Image 1 (tube, rainbow, N blue to C red):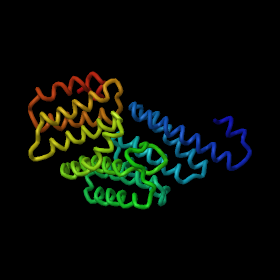
Image 2: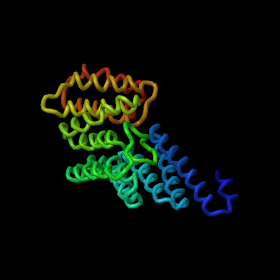
Image 3: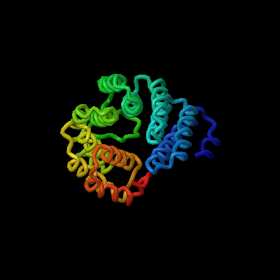
Image 4: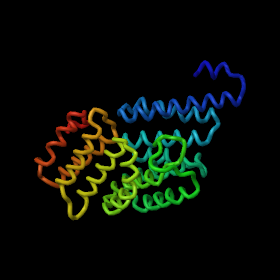
Length: 268
């Protein structure tokens, strides 16, 4: 790619080549996040943003900021995740990346930072933004250049509300998202929703630990042999939360074993 760019003397084709390179770096960054290789992911995502600048394409800069926010979120640096998302919104304008940046980037980060009103506002804005976009049916690519779907907005809203302990809001959003997620057939997407459902169960007044553990166990079976950091982290968080609330290690023992077998990052 570098040789092609260096050998191209026309401005517009050079910008197109920079755009292709931006997309390649961004996808590599996304894959590295999933593998928990954060230093590599940061480098690829930063490169994607720089290449988007060279391409002089605002939507590519917005897209790359979304990837940087995603990377920071799973590094548990929620302030950085929020800052990347907010800057991405500046580049996105009224384009389709605005929806993803609002709900996947900013709202989820604000949920982790405990900002209830901020989450309400951004979830509402993301839902309103869909009215002006070409909204895909079902579940679109989570790192595509197009708009998030209704189900993707709802599932990301659920994750934001989960961090705030708002179990009823989580269930409401997941009820909206689950039909499309189930139809899409992605084991990772379904696993994430099952873990969010399980955590919401444990947060409710009529908490049922056995039911919640069953949901997380089902999620881990879905991705057995195909682990990604998002599923691993959320399952570990569930186990820590449940262990802190109940002194009932028998129900949690199978999850401890499954997480240890899949390479849990903190050995639980």
